[in-house]
Length: 67
Image 1: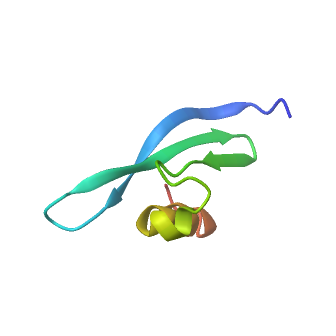
Image 2: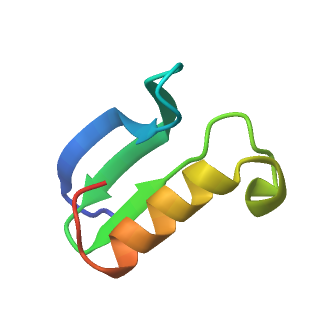
């Protein structure tokens, strides 16, 4: 697709309970007109095995908030 990379790979973090603090949810890469996100350690069943990370990634993207 030869899109311009706006922001190279960077991790995103998800809040958990007060004992654990923040955990890494995955990685984001932003192109001009496309955002590619991964969910760390989820495989193809992300909503089942990593629900907090999936929710964070999808809902922040849908509502155009920083991931």
